[in-house]
Image 1 (tube, helix red, strand yellow):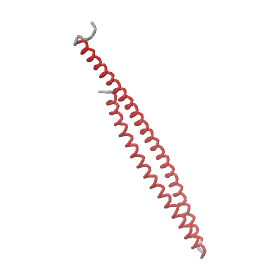
Image 2 (cartoon, rainbow, N blue to C red):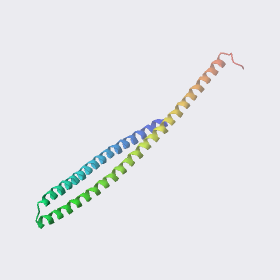
Image 3 (cartoon, rainbow, N blue to C red):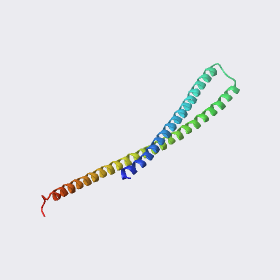
Image 4 (cartoon, helix red, strand yellow):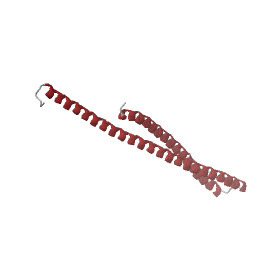
Length: 150
C-alpha cells in the first residue's frame, strides 16, 4: 500500500473526529442559547415584577407585603446570579469545544497536505520509473536491431 493510501485512512479517521467535534460544538452552542434565553426570561420577569410592585406600592401596601417582596426579590436575584454563572460556564464550554474543533480541523488539513505531497512524490517516482523503462526499451531496440555501436 502506498504512503498516500495509508495516509487517506488516517485522514478519514481525523475527518470523522473533526465532524464529531463540530457536532459537539453545535450542541454546546445550542445549550448556551438555551441558558441565555432562560437568563433573559428571568431578567424580564424581574423587570415586570419590580414594575408591578412599584405600581402597587403607590397605592400603599402593608409591611408584610413589603417583606414578602424583599424576600422574593432576593430569591429572584439569587436565581439570576446562578443563571449568569451557568451562562458563563456554558460560554467556557463553547470556547473549549470550538478550540477542540479548530485543532481537529487543523490536524485534518495538515494530514491532507502531507497526503498531497506524498501523492505528488509517488507520481514523480512513477514518471521516473516509466521514463527509465522507456529509455531501457529504446536502448534494447537500438541494440537489438544491430544498429547500435559494438
